[in-house]
Image (tube, rainbow, N blue to C red):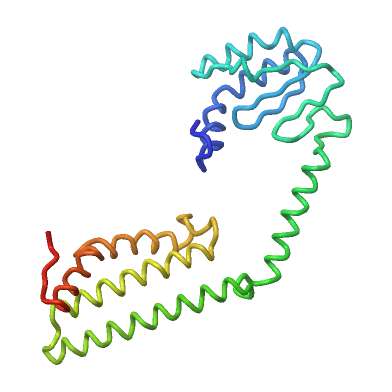
Length: 227
């Protein structure tokens, strides 16, 4: 599975589902306690050695190979950990104190963030102020270009000024919006991700930012820098 991909665990679980019944039958036959998550499987009992070859065959039947370098055989009194959980504790699945502290900290952060809107933080308001300034400047620019067009005075350099300025500010603004949303900013569940991609297209097609500046520069100096 591609490590780190957002669908890795789901794909692995779907693939292993075809072998789930066979593995469950093996564990029941040998009276084993087992737990699994994605491609990690742990099981314990008196007949683990007899069950191992059967587990390997069941996985091979669906095209999976056991990573022998990652396999281990622990004693009865050692902690069997799977994704941070101790699976053979007499009190049920348990977590190390360090892991429990991390979870409490994460939950506390969510509670605090929920009670306090992110817009109330200083750096967020700084970004919002810069974003609204960019939007207002672009609106003024486009309004002025529309006036020149109505008066029959709009030239190619005028249009280049508007295109270069507005698309660059649009790109900058949606980048700040994505920053405000954090990791959610690149998720398809949030509109800002789509705007972020669109802004890159606006910035480039129908004349790149650099090409527009060359047109403007020629109008200012009378010299062509086109190659």
